[in-house]
Length: 290
Image (cartoon, rainbow, N blue to C red; front, side, top):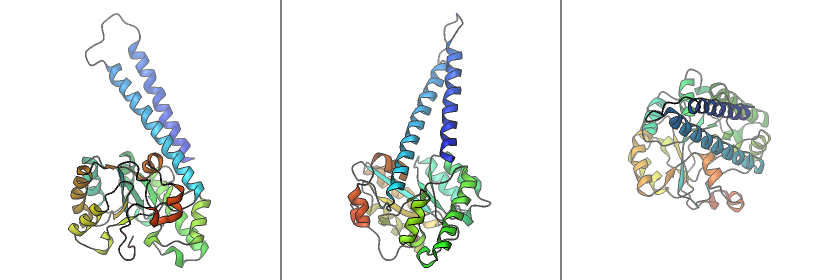
């Protein structure tokens, strides 16, 4: 329902813009002014069309990976793309993350804890409007594999509902806290049409390491196809990001959202089957602290 609403809104916007362009372009004997408004609006129509096409491609990719039902650890590594991901928000620090990443034109994928959303819905909407991708991260951040099947499903769905209320549409991405999932979790995720996204580069920022250590671990993992785990609640992660972004650009790598990576440089079936071992680089020291 949420995806159909989004697509309908995009198509409606295209129709309205097209009508305005046609109105401005038609009639009258006066020569068009310099910087004609119809030329400007025409560019907006073209850009909106590209955005709609990109959205459709990403939506199709997400649906395909939801049907496959295997966790995603990385991209295909055929294109110079890297996905930065931020867990555990929204948080009081979210505004500073938004300001930095918007200024640098770096889109990210966020995995939100449901209980953190109330009172911080504006952060969620701003991130959505910046083109960031949204995923859920349960309602209260438990070790899912330690819960009963019913409690697992309750946690997953409550987290989904919290994000949906703020976003206006359900997120299609899901990340299990602490990487804790089992066959029951995977079946629940598949049944609800979600894509389970893990990572192949863990900065370990959740353990309170220094900004320098976070940057060094992220930079070591800056390879095509990498999905890099960080957290939206860590001051040192915020401090590390400028250095990570500089290194990414120096290496000619493009920051993309997970849906875009899945649409344009997806992992192969063999990579999905191998999990972590299917990724070009695996930097996951110790136990995941997501």
